[in-house]
Image (cartoon, rainbow, N blue to C red; front, side, top):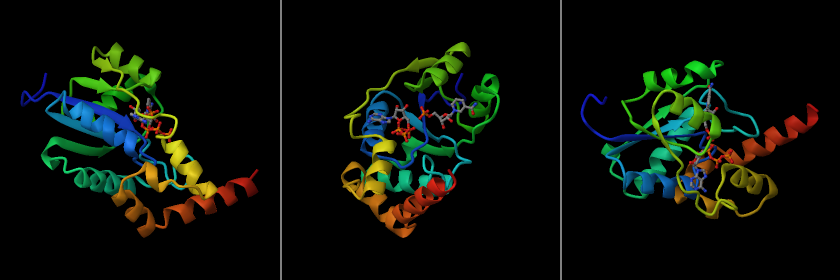
Length: 180
Ligand SMILES: Nc1ncnc2c1ncn2[C@@H]1O[C@H](COP(=O)(O)OP(=O)(O)OP(=O)(O)O)[C@@H](O)[C@H]1O
Ligand SMILES: NC(=O)c1ccc[n+]([C@@H]2O[C@H](COP(=O)(O)O)[C@@H](O)[C@H]2O)c1
């Protein structure tokens, strides 16, 4: 039960980085709920090929991308969430870190299973242009020198330049190959 009677939904994703698919789904969820909680998943990870950006950098990217869309800042929370080793109590960990919510939006079968077992409503959000709109595709294009910019918001391009994100990813790829 919510302490303030607001209907809240939660969307958890690693946002490595946030892309136009996330933005569209966030807008869609905001048509259904009063407020959305955006959980930045695997918050402890950074400087890895699959997870190059820190939780703090991801918070900035998400905040600025939503500002660019003129989404009312009073309607969302951005909360970094570290992984824990115990799946059975992960939902309690998420609950502890967030404002009360009643709907979970996720297509991830494990996330769905864990929250359903705790009695939450889990909805499968629509996927937009999934062939192109995924964090993996953004990172792949960054490494390949292809057009990743079209997949993300202008503000994300700016943050990426500020933190030299593409250069970081390329350095990580050289390091991971040399570690093989
Ligand atoms: N193209 C998309 N359209 C709508 N929602 C999306 C899209 N891509 C991801 N999402 C949403 O974001 C959540 C996962 O976030 P995450 O940042 O892990 O996305 P991802 O793009 O699949 O990442 P990666 O490719 O790095 O694994 C999913 O549960 C899904 O609801
Ligand atoms: N035990 C745990 O810590 C646990 C369990 C399920 C999902 N998660 C996290 O939730 C997020 C889910 O995002 P995806 O839907 O993109 O996989 C990921 O960051 C994942 O690591 C963590």
